Image 1 (cartoon, rainbow, N blue to C red):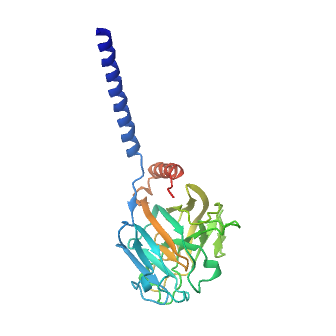
Image 2 (cartoon, rainbow, N blue to C red; image 1 turned 45 degrees about the horizontal axis):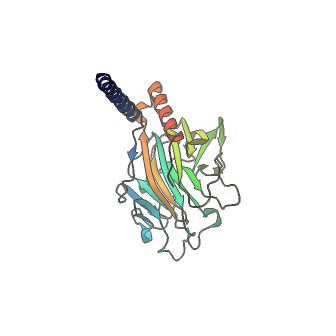
Amino acid sequence: MKHITTLLALLALLSCKTEEKKGTDTEVQDIQQPKWIQLFNGKDLSGWTPKITKHPIGDNYMNTFRVSDSVIEVNYDGYEQFDKQYGHLFYEKPYSAYFLAVEYRFKNEQANGGEGWAWRNSGAMLHSQPPETMTVDQDFPISIEGQFLGGNGTDPRSTQNLCTPGTSVFIADTLYTPHCINSDSKTFDGDQWVRAGFLVLKDSLIQHYANGEMVLEYTHPERDEILPGTDTGLKLEKGYISLQSESHPIEFRKVEIIDLDSLYNDKSSLQKEIDLIRDFEKNYKLSQ
């Protein structure tokens, strides 16, 4: 009996040690997680401002942008015709160096009057001009667009592409002036959720990610012209983030960012944080 009691005591001690180790591992894992800032609170559009073509800033025409069931909906149920009323939902704060993640999915049918190229087409605008500097009839902000495209079930159609409204970039040290370039992503058909990621390091490097895989990179984004009434120059080192409405309904359930600006001049710490983010994105489990 004495031996059995001693054995049980040892087993209990080992169990406690195992639980302590598990707890320690969990704590280390928690410390190593990237520190996300949620730009969308899951409840309303606090911190976001719409700018829709043909309408003044702040006019959320026909309730295009709305929150329902903890997602941002882009919806056209109030439109008779889309009539090139392109919309952008701007976050209130500009950023310069960061990693942005956006989870999106296309749904339902395109709005009446939407152009063919805009079918299952949306995007996240990076380094954008301030929304108050856009004219009433301006279609797109001067920016770098991370373009979202959905597949048609038959043909290849990459997402996290690059479009350049009023801007240019360098690819492999060569100035690239065409409006759009495709990424190396696979095609995402149907209404599935996709996680888009953007590593933006001022004007030194921008990378696009699709479900954790890097699919496009470029450098030195710049404006084609200086913004009227400003002294910002041509270099694009910072700007606003916005989500598009281009005639096809889309939902955004997560918009989150890691601000890297404070690490930008500390290359060693910056690289460690980027490695952590890349590892997190690669192992991220996207629910459908």
